[in-house]
Length: 128
Image (cartoon, rainbow, N blue to C red; front, side):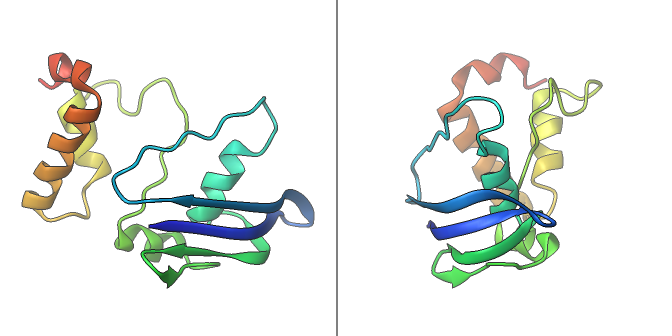
């Protein structure tokens, strides 16, 4: 579903990622682990189009999205949520999930919310 091959990327002229490759199949959960400053967030930001790609490729469902604008990537169904303590403190879990999926059709959004609750069942207690 997401294929990254020999990705070199960074911010401006600052080269951060060197020859990163990964494949994430549909329906799987992937964790990117490493110490602070190792490029974990930069990999995700690059997939979402927020950094400069110097070389390599990024494909989503077979489509080349390398260097694509973030709004176009979002329309394909990829979202980037930066690490924060909470997204919207005044919203419950359901409302936060609905905000994250605002570009989806209502039935697709409900399916995604059900999937999130299957993966993270402890969130059910905080839906309302």
